[in-house]
Length: 597
Ligand code: ADP
Ligand code: MG
Image (cartoon, rainbow, N blue to C red):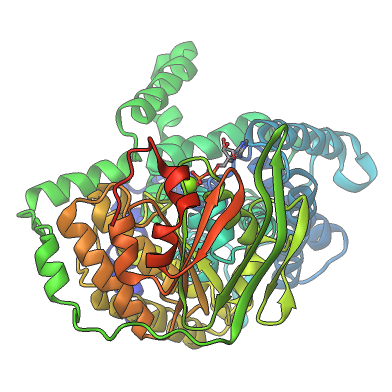
């Protein structure tokens, strides 16, 4: 609770002292107005931090939500005499609902179409504001917009209102910060990084995106309230497409994921044209050029550049890679031989999957019992990965059924399959590359699902407890697999360690069945040895596994039951020894470069 506040404190103090540092007189008043403007823009831009930075969705309609908030507030406050705070809350709610509806309509579209739809919405909103005279006053706008009072104290002067703006900005920054570490934040980042993997970890992609859209719109509306009250007057020309592009620029210039960066970016984009005013008609050109230069040369924005600079000055701690043998040594290698039961856990019946003319899986029958380490073997292209993809809900089957723990999960969605207790890894490792190893595993833990958005934002202690629990559990799981480079971004880890992080992400929430697609592929000898100890260990923890493997020697040491596929069909099943001796299997592998046990 204290830590995040401490993190922001120096920054907030600087913001609070800014007006005191400005020269007195007219210049001071002028800059104070600009600072109030900056605060209102920054609140709206923080909405884009959530949408663009966290969830990776593009919107060029932030000025529309800014306008919807400003107008709702002004209409309620001026025409209907609704009290300030009530009008403000209503304005934020109306903007959020508009965001929700627009999101539900447009978020199933690919990102370039989404961008177009948001531009359309932006233009329509501005046209409505300009032409609905009875409600909005048309091009003349609305004046005499009220400023607040709090506990009987009128907060009317610019200086007083600057403090109000600052408090609102701090609140918005806090909410966006809280979001980053919450279950919803993890889900947003995960789907920005990899939608398929996110869905496989129980994240409802569409719902999560719609929520991001609505939160962004709500913050846009809140910024609009500040703008209207700060300027005392609004007219439609402010809420233009150009302003939406400016919001976009604020986030990109500052650093799309960074809260402090977004606030800095808002300041820059607001102040720069004023500072450049002496250039007269060249102002816009020079301003545009500067923005382009920042975006081109500082890919992580101003804040990213600052943070890199600070990081560079500090002596860099380089955590050495844990050598594979060390990894193996940290794990119990004396695990007992796994014991399978006869209780059916998963039953695949007559499963068929076709891709156009190719029948990738053809009438497959396969049973996994509780406690099994079942292994699916077969030459390349025999349909093994397809079985896993249908099983985990990524592809729909063309025929047959899947029963798990007595319930049918045929053609369930990936998050339903995950909720049923099946977790998986991918043949081509699908970690969330920009997230750290720990964050990847935390997303896996959150897939268990308890505290929702309301819990995160309203019941702060509960949200914190859940986050602490997730982090502790993620560390524990990674630790149990002999991994300790928690804070390294996934994309910077060597291949073998990425596999381990992916396995940790898959098991951290305690699934019943773990699906592994060629976990040893691309690993060297030591890493493979470490991996088999890890699989023993996971099995000891009570997990049933279905794993696909190519490397027969690796399989022989861990499997309790083997299935062999060729051309989409099962050609043999039994113990590893018996299937390897099966003439049909030998025939299928003849000429293939696979080694025998
Ligand atoms: P394996 O994992 O055993 O190597 P796969 O399940 O990946 O085999 O592939 C089985 C067959 O299905 C191959 O012929 C492959 O080309 C085809 N296939 C797999 N996925 C797709 C897809 N998404 N679209 C079209 N064909 C696919
Ligand atoms: Mg495969």
